[in-house]
Every structure is written in C-alpha cells, then in structure tokens.
Amino acid sequence: KEWLSKGHGEYREIPNERDFFQEVKESKNVVCHFYRDTTFRCQIMDKHLTILAKKHVETKFLKLNAEKSPFLCERLRIKVIPTLALIKDGKTQDYVVGFTDLGNTDDFTTETLEWRLGCADIINYR
Image (cartoon, rainbow, N blue to C red; front, side, top):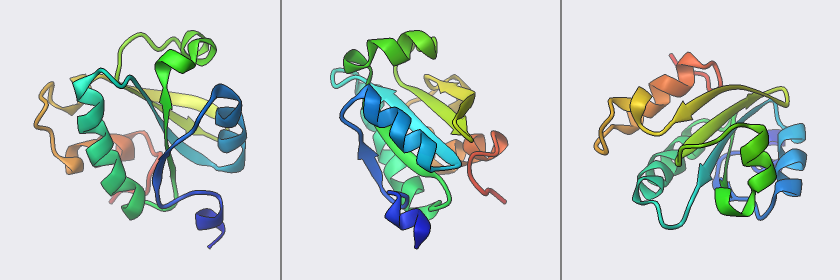
C-alpha cells in the first residue's frame, strides 16, 4: 500500500526535472525512461514498461521528455533515445541505452527487458 501511495504500480509521465528529483527521493528503486515524442522506439519501450510497472510494484516506473529536460540529460549523460536510467537509493546505478542490451531488435519481448532490469537489481526478478 505504501508503494502504491507513492505512485508505484503504474507507468506515468512526470512533467519536469524538478518533479524527477522529488519522485526519486521517495522511492528506493526507480526506472526512468527518457523519451522523445517523435522517436518510434520510445513507443515500443512504453508498451513494455506499462506491463512491467503493474507486475513490479516494488519499483517506480516513470517517463520524462528528454527535450524538456536538458539539465538532467546533460548531468546523466543521456545521448541516445530511448534510454532508461536505473536509479537505486537516489543514485543512477545503470542505464539501458537504446535496444543494444535487448537483442538489438524492435521485436524484443517484455521478458527480455524484465531480465535486463533484473540483472541491474532494480526489480525483484527470479
């Protein structure tokens, strides 16, 4: 219940960089998708993250428009869209950059992404 009250269990967009810091402070595990509206692969990522957010309520799943977040993109060195920043205890531990770790294909499965997030210990994956 505590996780759900902090926005876990759903995949949602945060409007700005200031909200990002507040969201990350509240939760131990956060996956943040840096996306662009015009990038088709971001829609593929959205589809998988929507499924995983419902399945892994122990982790908060967010998305942030990279074009509206120049400071964060610079600070986190985000150059490829989509990029997932994997944040544990307020610190960025790992990144999933593009689809390289996901088989380098647009047809990767939700399980493949789930496995990759499990490798980073950002979700409870067995």
